[in-house]
Length: 403
Image (tube, rainbow, N blue to C red; front, side, top):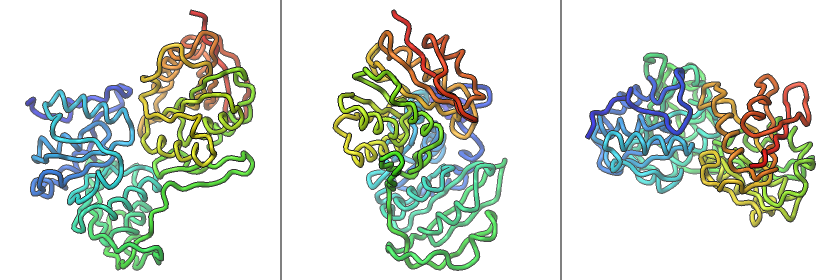
């Protein structure tokens, strides 16, 4: 076994850059705060949620002796990075990757959690821990302070009696959370002022009930004639983000004769569902690397009655899609890598699209105008023209060169 080092962790297959790291101070602090509990745990009693690239999982195994760790990572790139890093350290047998749910959390006594930036995501995770973990479970939930919010305490306090923020270190902080409440559908809300004070103040809250789970949520958008379903970790929730809404306005122009299409980075499946509803003869693949997005998109296609014509897959870009297999690809690319603004992910998606598009196929892209993606699209995919532009967004169509 190779000696474990945080500095030796890599982000592959995610974007690598000088300002992007596979581990940070929050990972180290979570492991330090949880050290005694992890060391005292039996095999299978530790669960890890939200581990970016494997620092928490492999640190718990290598530094604290945890075995049979159960792990859930929303991003497929994180799963692949964990597996790759584990192989390098000889720790591949120390963990098992699982979906977010009962199998992951059932009977867990210790949960190591990287706090998600979305409060909805945190609500879903906290509810599942409260429902399935051991009654004496302790959660060590941490993140960098610039990404933490007081509202996170309030979300956790819906499900747990004690939410104790620890001391900050290197701009990171850990919340120690324990004592689940009893399940109920008539949760009365916070009691006491502990949560309302400060992130640095312990919250001892009197609870007798906790709220019922309501995930995925769903909302009908009458102006679009479309249901949108969303799990907590899905971008935009049940809303339709403004870039997607702008692209929906010109969707009828997107290669009308296409028999096959891909919604790349599908999120909640809005574009895939709308395209399938408008074109009964088309076959659509919706792909995203986020487990929450994929689950949401499946629910959205079912709610709109198009699940038989929309195949939803979890994929790293279009890695599993054959060359020259799609006539139309729709893309609303992210410009964040985790919590960092970074443009590196878009060219990767453009490259995937260029490979998967059939000759003469079209990539329709909507993006924030200031990002200026048109030259890159022309270079990577093929001739690119502007279709529409408003105060914030630009829509382009790129035609794949004949091979």
